[in-house]
Structures are given as C-alpha cells and as structure tokens.
Image: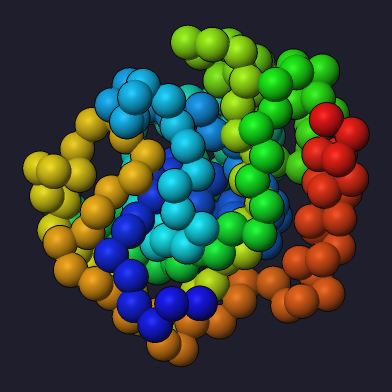
Length: 190
C-alpha cells in the first residue's frame, strides 16, 4: 500500500458503504460519459473511494443494499464537502465480455440483474469486474468538492496527496479470501 496517494475513484455512496461493511468485495464498472477515450479502464490499482450520490437508483441495487441508500443520503455531509473514509487496493480486475458471464457473478456484487444488464450494454457490450480490498482510514479526510471533480467520470485526481498510514483492512485475510474465492472462480470461467 502506498504511504500517500492523490487518486480517488467515484463510487455510489450506498455501494461504498456495502463494500465498507464487508458485504461485497467486488464492484462492476462501465464508466461515465467523461471517461478518457469514452471508455472506463482500471488505470489505478490503488485509490481512495470518493462517495457520490448522483445517479444512485433503487432499481439497480439488490434489496440488501437498499437500506444503505437512505442511510448514506441521511448521513451525507453538507453540499461542497466530500468525506474520504476508505482506501482500496485492487486484487483482480477482469473485463467481462459475455452477459452470461456477468450474470454468473450474481449475488457477488451489490447490483440487480437489470442494473448489470444496463451497465453491460451501455455504449458497447462488456463491463469490468473489480475485486477490491478496502481499508478504513484512521481519520476521515473531508475535502472540498472541487469543480474539477464534477461530471460522470470514474477517476478523480485529488488536489493534494492524502496519507494512508494507520489504515485497517475492513475484512481480515481469511474473510477476504472467502469472499473473493467464488468471484475468482466465476471470473476464470469467463
């Protein structure tokens, strides 16, 4: 893990919370309209999570995550402030080119079948399955929501580097291995 970093990854606040609770260790990503070259890529293997509230849709989230949608909205900081609570290391990232293989991951991520299909078919078929290890930071960094962070983009270069010292894994090694094993098995098939 890097000692400090200045890259963040935008993720729905509800999904961020589900990952932070250890419910999931994988997310699916297609990307936003402002991605470089119009497509999402796993450009970074380590980053901070930048929680977003835009475009969160109940219909895209599995029932287990729906309570987190309202909870994260209720706990949101005042407009113009972003809480950075988690750091991520990516252990595996696989581009899934088959909808059948994307459906084989059902139950291993926080999205509904319809949400997966919408992401899969956006622009061109396929999406990224990203297995990630979350670390809780010892303190919450509250950063101003700069104009350069706006828009439908996944990667956000922060104005300054933030420290990772003292970050603690959300799941211990055994729990992380148990959660990631079925994902890796399903991804090997694809």
